[in-house]
Length: 175
Image 1: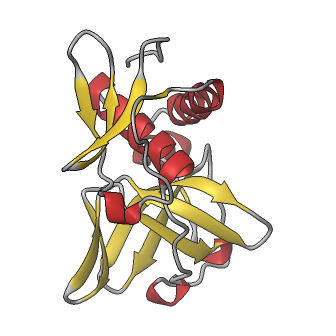
Image 2: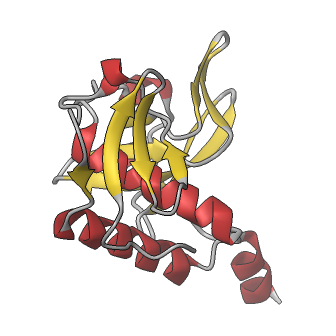
């Protein structure tokens, strides 16, 4: 996993929000300019607050023991920070998902489920009843012909979140 560095900075190009990682390395986020509240007009340095978001998300994901490569982890972290810092608020869309009797997130990870399947998300922000989540599965089906792509955001009531528990944890507990 990449660690934030002092020479990282945000900028926008024709493709959307980008993060320069120094030494001619560029990271293209999943977010086009139409999804952003503000766009960096020039270089916007990766701030202390950005670094804090990055480290917090990394700690949560590492504590969950989710099996991610270093590249996958870095991709989730950068898109997560980009969403927290730049993404427009999203509308509540709880009705697409099944209400849960036991709900919540473990290490900010949860799943959402409906009759079309299940997808994993990371909770980026939450209050008493609502959570803004970023899809970390390849996609998440909403209805037959509509899906959210990886790294898209969705806001749901917290009673739709299924706590994320690794299958290996379940298997070891049942043995």
